[in-house]
Image (cartoon, rainbow, N blue to C red; front, side, top):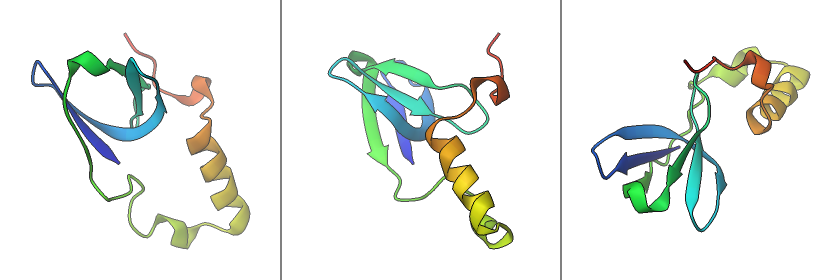
Length: 84
């Protein structure tokens, strides 16, 4: 997980889903992906922690865990919250 603080003081947490010379895209839990222009980033730090709740995998069988990893990698946009 990464924490990004913007020049205007907003803070966002998520995993980096994509990056380019111009921007990064954070994949956030229970929210849509967020693209942030690099010129707007004041600070970007790795937390060293996963966003997955600790112990979640203990209740999953092998197929469930494979399905979870597939979804995290490429979520079905229809299942993500809609932005206003």
